[in-house]
Amino acid sequence: MMNSKDILIKVNELYKIFGDDDKSALNLVKNGMGKDELLEKSNCVLGLNNINLNINRGKIQVVMGLSGSGKSTLIRHLNRLIEPTSGEIFFNDINILNLSQKELIQFRQNNMSMVFQKFALFPHKTVLQNVGYGLAIQNISNDKWSEKAQKWIKRVGLDGYETYYPGQLSGGMQQRVGLARALATDAEILLMDEAFSALDPLIRSEMQNILLDLQNELHKTIIFITHDLDEALKIGDRIAILRDGSMVQDSDPQEIIMNPADEYVSDFIKDINRARVIQAKSIMTPTSIKSLGATVKEDMVLEDILQIMSDSPSKPVTIKNSKGKIIGKIEMVNLIEGMKRPKSLGTNITG
Ligand SMILES: Nc1ncnc2c1ncn2[C@@H]1O[C@H](COP(=O)(O)OP(=O)(O)OP(=O)(O)O)[C@@H](O)[C@H]1O
Ligand SMILES: [Mg+2]
View 1 (cartoon, rainbow, N blue to C red):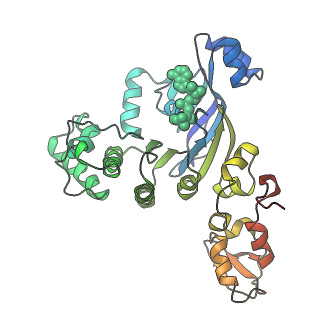
View 2: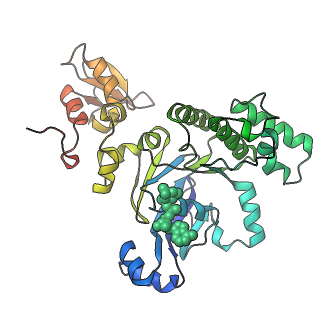
View 3: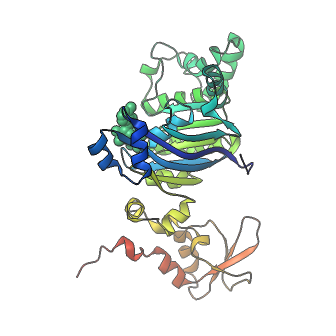
């Protein structure tokens, strides 16, 4: 079934309809009925509509979309907290929908950890007990799980707080406990549903950095739901965008900004600071010949290139890839074009 070793999770033609007669509703949806009409005609809610998604091993897959678009419904299918109306979900080449109840419990314990928006810690257990919980229930000896929990507590910067209770910690600290708990089981997959959304901006940014640091070391496969485009751009290797249960785009973050699939996606990206987000590779003219100006990396953002070019604006900069090979050039006019919002996003200038 799997044709690439880079793909860890494969979602095929996944449909979820909430309601009593979901099977007949499924036919209506397959024949093109949308979410609003379905609710009106059959009193069923269209949760997911023909989702196809390949999630790469060791990467961060972001899922975005407005409230009610199906993000949580999708992520909860991955560990079968929700059963689909129809479709397939593969983990490596195991169809997880075929697992028995017993196998499913094993699968969840060994392969997946979840980090929740509201932390979901046990209030009457200490930090150490919370972090070690997933191990303690696996009949691992006290010494062993405490040692492991201790290691992760340290790794998320909570050294010294082992005997505290969640109620004695700030929100950001509680979410560190949540993260340490998820990491302690060594699961390959982390499911994070708005995990940082309840935190205030500075703490949130700090948590994003902790996650990225850990990811550099651990290479987990992370499915990360967020409402926040800046967060998605900062941490996502890919971004999938849901609308009314359908997938409208799933691509490289640069591609989302340069080529939004439709107006819904355009609307998400219209307020971003393009100079800080768009990278050299997205606007360069391909060439293997060195230009007159400085040489910069393909992932340098336009703002930084502008800084470099301002010394000698007439000299195009050379772009090299991560292996040091020359792959393109950028002239001042390309920079200006790149920073300009595409026509489809409209303009703020009047009169
Ligand atoms: N148990 C349920 N019963 C009926 N409808 C449901 C159920 N769970 C979700 N839905 C519906 O499915 C749709 C998708 O919900 P979901 O919770 O996945 O959205 P979301 O994108 O996670 O939204 P939010 O950003 O608000 O968390 C919504 O219309 C919701 O009303
Ligand atoms: Mg949700």
